[in-house]
Length: 142
Image 1 (spheres, rainbow, N blue to C red):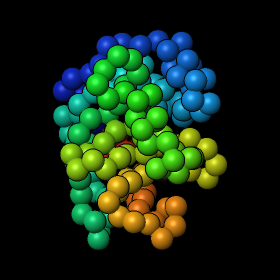
Image 2 (image 1 turned 90 degrees about the vertical axis):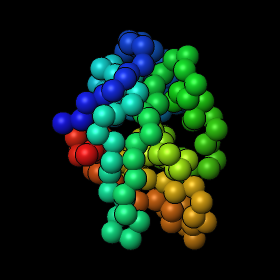
Image 3 (image 1 turned 30 degrees about the vertical axis):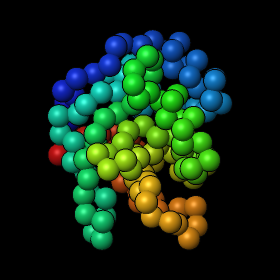
């Protein structure tokens, strides 16, 4: 089970609903629970496998909601048009790649790794599935 070295200031369900309303998205329940518990932060166990060909990477930090350097809202606005619209970035790795959470359609609730410096042939060409749910991704960090 992953522990967090540090977490961001506590937020309420109203803060999350406000974020969802502002960006017209619905976050999966288990991710909402994570935000209520930690509101992002730095995981103690942070390594994850990308794929056999890409190896592994680390979660640098999970984004939170509120007044912090990198938060969900700022990252959402920066990456709008860069990442597929069915996703929101929830974390990054030290190389500037993003960990994305599916927020609609067939990707709902699934966690993907988005590599920023691969020029994809199609929308999903630089993305690798990491887990079928946020909980699965989080508990499998090592």
